[in-house]
Length: 161
Image (cartoon, rainbow, N blue to C red; front, side, top):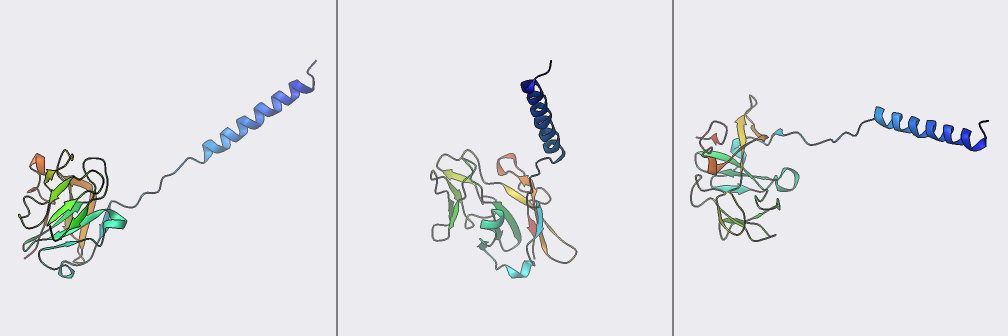
């Protein structure tokens, strides 16, 4: 009654079902880097500097003014490319479509503000704090936006005297 093809179909169905069940037991896991990390002590960064030490690994600049630190996102707000800091022109310039963002010479209030190209908004700033060990802690999970007036909120910068 149940021929060779019938048994073959049943065994194939059971095999495929078993493979699906085994695959279900091992879900896909995406390992992402932590959003909060320590980047050194405040004294390691000179005044009025843009540190590109973290561009490749974590995509942000640490900018030190005379009285504060700011962690500035290195993700263009147009299409997500990584801008470059051009120290001679004092601006962050996106190589993809030419968006330009303000540098450090116009003050911390204007840092990262978009002024040329297709970028729709300024670069974001990440939360900064000081760990008990005295190291600077950056939290990329908390972003502050200039156009929303968040640049003075607690955590948007780290005071330094």
